[in-house]
Length: 395
Image (cartoon, rainbow, N blue to C red):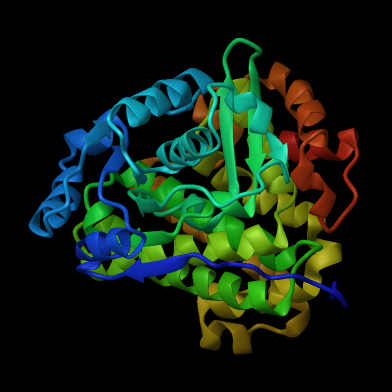
């Protein structure tokens, strides 16, 4: 499992805490930006989450020149082009993305167009295409899960061709990620649960997959501990600011971990299920995590056993014989999923989602094998293997 060689890269400044938003103007002026554009979605705006961001800027004499609040849940090349047109027309000079994964990915893609020029985002798709730093870009996550605020990847749907275009470049990394608990206080219970399990999965896969390394391990274990300690508390008391901040920090830490150590089969299955059955990503992560760990268990016994310390705490860890710790870690994850199911009916099986047909499992398995994440799974996966995991996850 240990790599003799590894790279670790995370140049994103993290500004976190109860008055984090108030620091945005200072960061903008530090990069000579005076005319920011906000990229967000209707839900974020309706929840009043833009108010503190706008207030913070206006108090410092910064004008928010333009607000685009029509980002769809699955962002597309058309939306990206539309926003870039507005950006140019209003002579903006920077972007603040406020929202979940879709708004953040959209902000990244818009930044490519307004920095590089042109209208065709597709020609920048792939890895290593961008050669220059982009315009000032800040991210304010409103869900604690995706970790997009610290990753160098964006995915945008090309509606005409019906494909998802991946963009990968260190230039896509924001100048700063602003983590403020006010931004996640209004998250509904099922989204709180699914996004926190998204972060949990990022961290568990980062800690157990092929490219794990000592630096990513430190971020991954810290994230797992935070989710384990805070998630059910926040579910029971949604206005718990400290718990919300813990979950938001866990998401960021898990994002740093997995963008440096990669993920595995949970993500491959999740991406395929999202594409075929249109289930939310965080839900897929929560759903597949224990089944994939069971499939991988003989290849990851040692690291998975170590995670028991962060999932259940020192007492349980020391009371569990070393040979049983890997299984106990999976039980701990199942226990957490049961607790979430009780509180907000977060599905634990494909059947419980009501959106997946048993007849779709073959197609999901086939698509998952083509997903890049599968290369880093600690155990080789055949189509039969993937199908077997899906059948276990079905009921």
